Image 1 (cartoon, rainbow, N blue to C red):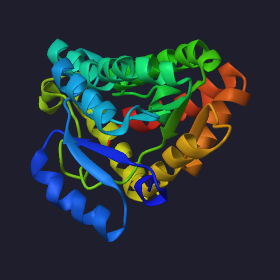
Image 2: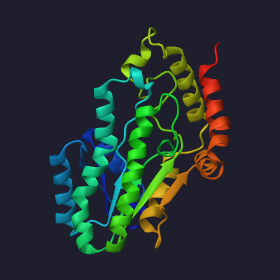
Image 3: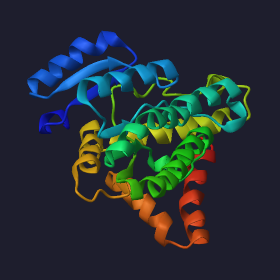
Length: 267
């Protein structure tokens, strides 16, 4: 979407075999897209991309932190290396990319940093302990960074989508589940199955598409006065507003109580 509106967009991928497909899609839309390799867990890779952009364009106006993976499972079933990989990608990857770009944006005294978080960054859920933890961390980082950068002309915005339909997550697949969640001897096995069923149901009935998320990103990059948060999807807005305006004990009793009843019910 940004490429169609006159922005030069560097689209980053870890799998360069996707490059021809992405370039063809961009050509069909008359979008200026330059596909480059990036692994947000590799500092050398990050530095190379930032240096290439500055060399070819002179500076960097916007950074969209959208690299992310999913990890689902009750905390006791999740291995340390699974959680560390999640944080290295979703949280520390965001920090590393942002840190590499900030000096150029600060020198230019302008710019936009967009961080794609999730409604899970505002509210936790059973089997979402690790995932919500990394999204909550992103939100705290973004809130502080926004205050640090605003006097320097750089704006920070959060995108908070609800469950979004993609080609990756389908019923019957692991969908980011931790390895030990498939162990029938786990004390959480049945609860996790129920939790996954709720997740699949939410995904299959979701009206949010990747285009909706892209539209929010475009607004955060292009609006003269970008908002601090962009909730994407009616469910996400409903839950976030309910958490904001309903007294804590009532919200916990009705929302969390209903979630727990659905997860722990037998049959």
